[in-house]
Image (cartoon, rainbow, N blue to C red; front, side, top):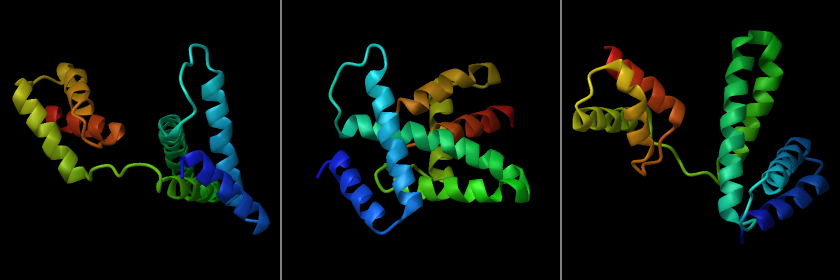
Length: 151
């Protein structure tokens, strides 16, 4: 079963069971997919690859927003919890990222391979790590590269 069909079945089930948080996140993903389809220059099919790209982008966006709500403390607690639910729900379709230690190992090996010692070359290192084909989190890679080249 493809992702679109899974989400359709999930939406029907969520609506029957009056699971508003689940139906909201599914509707949001479908909305994001519609926006991606309508984007100028979109050529291709609405397939699992498009859904995965959209979900990954959406999770990245709401992860950043969630961190901002968490920083607000009690005032942002409710919204942070809502976004945490959405991230958790969508994560079952997304590939797992490497943990911090494994990512740090990749960052160090790329730094060594390129012979980079200057923080000005951080973008080159980040680019190489992101192109390595490993399932890494871009924000984590950026932070680790800066730590390694600063320290």
